[in-house]
Image 1: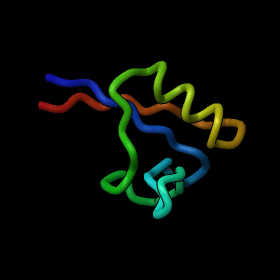
Image 2: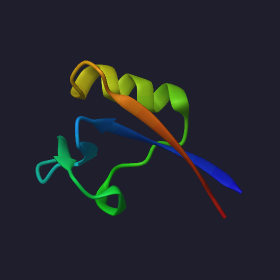
Image 3: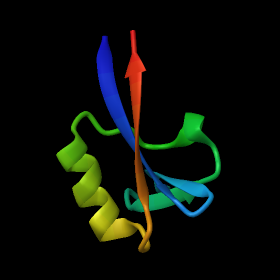
Length: 60
């Protein structure tokens, strides 16, 4: 089992942007996943507004 992390900001999630930057999507399926909590936290601090959430998901 693998654990991945998503960053939710408001009603959207961080996702890969068209130009290589970070974008936002309302869809968890299109969201960027991170392989460590620390990586997700860094992305959130750099790209999400205050009050972001880091969501943990376990995948097989």
